[in-house]
Length: 354
Image (tube, rainbow, N blue to C red; front, side, top):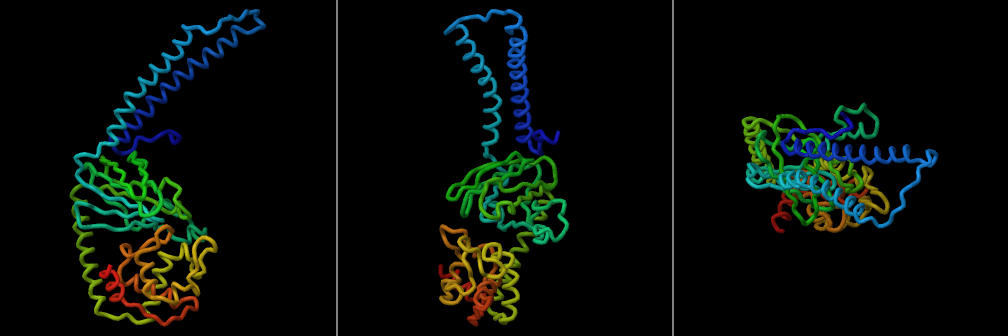
């Protein structure tokens, strides 16, 4: 039934489902008994039948019965519930460990057993969100880079946050853990069937809370190994290509073109496409001191963010090219016109000096 809990695709999710159904049936039996006695009493002991109600006070027998019976029922419920909860919290002997970090408003995945980490962002087209295009089947539940894990292996998740409280939730795994800044919560899963599984942030975490989906692809071990090898190689090549930028100077026009695209993808949600921000919520960049005065301070806030605010650091999220282009764009768009053309080498020099 669509209204009921689903079994999911993991042993834990099946255990949770079975526990749910056991408790549900116990509650149904209790409801039938309680309401049955209540309606029977009202029907057969009503005043119109001339029934004289019993008159007693502080019956020790009744007190013992209505204390002991619920206690026995709760103890009976506690045994299967405790067994399932212990299973859910047992993250030992994991075959793969992935760190999951939430931030406003995206997820970061880091494989501890492999040299790979990346960000996963919403892939739904803005035109769909603005009702300018027909919505896709997986509207608001699609990402640019899903988490990939092997089938039949125990995967441990270390869940934390860069800013506010998020919650990593994939219903078909029966995994839902809060991502708290400064803390690491643990969870795990072992997916039995290859496929694509979707979830989302389940904690109200700010303006774009609804735009923080989770997509996990479970692959057979051979396919996972091939995917991991390819991703690690691509990451290595990307780093090599980035290093080549250090000896190059991009033209002002190219910086502005790349910067506009990167700004819209990463910054416009808060500071707006017009650069005017949202008064009282997100500051404007148009005509602001940070964008037209101290270049070093501007680079610092783009790279490291601003603690205590929604402004997160993009130093680990974006490459040198995009970082340089964003700073250049912000310092020259909307009439700021500082004439600064920031190069990748300047961003790299700042990063290596920290």
